[in-house]
Structures are given as C-alpha cells and as structure tokens.
Image (tube, rainbow, N blue to C red; front, side, top):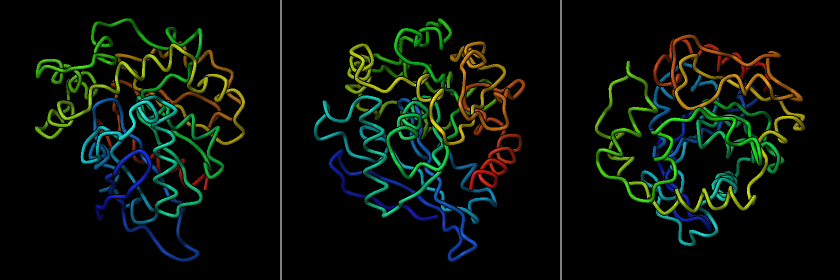
Amino acid sequence: MRKDKAETAHGTLAYMESEGLEGESAGPAVLFIHGNSSCKEMFAKQFEAPMAKRYRFIAFDLPGHGESSDAPDPALTYSIHGFADAAMALMEALKVERAVVMGWSLGGHAALEMLERWPGTIAAWITGTPPAGGADMAGGFLPTEEMGLTFKAEFTEEDARTQVRGGLGQSVEMEPWMLAAALRADGRFRPMMLQSAMEGRDGDGRKIAETAPQPLAVVTGGAEPYVNNAFLERVGYRNLWDGKVHVLDGLGHSPFREAPEVFNPLFERFLDEVS
C-alpha cells in the first residue's frame, strides 16, 4: 500500500492505494469514499485483505478531512455533489477511467451521484446510506439526537466522541486517530452540505437508485442506528445486486470495520461479479 497526494480544483487530496495486479488478470479500480468527519483509514480492514492484491483499491480523504486540504472554494465543494466532483477529479488525476465505487454513509450519497454522473462507474456499493432524496430524505433516516451532529459547524471533543462512537458501534474500539479525524474535519462543510440538500442542488438518491442501469449493492447493519432499514426495502431499484438489500445481523453503521470477516467475503463476491 502506498500513500500520496493529488492536486485538484477541490484542493490537495490525500489518498492511499493497494498494489493490485497488472495486465490482463488485473481487476478494475475500486474507489472507497468515507463518511462525515471521518477519513480514508476507516477502510484499512479491506486494504489488508487478500482481495486488495487482486484489485486496485483507492481510498481518499474528502476535502476538509484527514490529510487532504480544506476546500479552496467551499461553495464549490462542500455539498454531496461537490464531494462527488472531488472524487471524479481524483479519478482524473490518477488517470482512472473505470472503477467500482464503494461509499459509506455520506460517502454513499457521493457514490450514488457518481453512479449517475461519472461514465466510468462500473457499479456502486452503499453502506450506511439510504438512497433517498427530495421529499423522502427524512424518511430514510431514524430520528436520533446524534443525527443533529451531522450538520453542526463546530465539534467539541464530546461531540467528536459521540460522532465516532455512533459510527463504530459498541463492539469496535475507538482509536485515537478516529477521534483526531472527527476533530480535524473542516466543520464548515456540515451546514453548507445541509443548505445544498435543502435547496435541491444535489442528485436525488432514490431516483438514481431506481433508474441507474449499473449494479447497485445496498448493504446495511441489522442494528443500524441512523438508517431506516424499512425505507431501504421500499425503494424500487432498477438493478439491485443479488436482488435484495443485504442486512448484516447485529452489525451497526460501519460493518466493514466492525466485522470484516463478514463484510469482506460479500464485498469480494460483489467485485468479482460486477467486474
């Protein structure tokens, strides 16, 4: 695995990538997009798996997160569609023409935008993300106090701990770098992201899920604290992978971190089938 940075109109984007294979036996690139106030290292359990040697895994810090710079033009970048634009800019900088996109939480909303807007999207996988938009956006989420942090401009350390803990689930150890990532995030993006959504400037996730021809995997934890799993079943997907929403029993908002032994085989099968 190597780490590097790329210059884009959305700022300097820090990324890491696995070696993958070369030549005819190589699988496509796989782009990982993390969640609100998190960072690329959340996907370490996938990069450590054998499948990372078969596929070119790429994970990056969204603008205003991790080791990436804050957005030079917040109005251009700090929205769901702006984060998708940043992901596409990274793909262009890395000369990646085709990729499978895996999005977690906020990253899942950006992945849906890429499913619609980036011609190189082979397929998408969303976890911790309801494919909702417009009038039904609220119905995609469960009403919890912690959801209020999603759009709060400034985090106290207690806020950051609550944010990280809610994303991890109770069984996963909170590591210092996770808390540091939540405190580092440029809080300006949170209310700006909300404003963009309220003004209807982002893609309609439900419409995308119901019209996109590419395969879409929808995977959720059975103990998901934020996403309304009942909503996931009501969406009329055009091309739902495996023909069903995958519910991982007992797991929370980040099953890929909580139980990689459950998550990784399913993810690898998805990659093998869609590529």
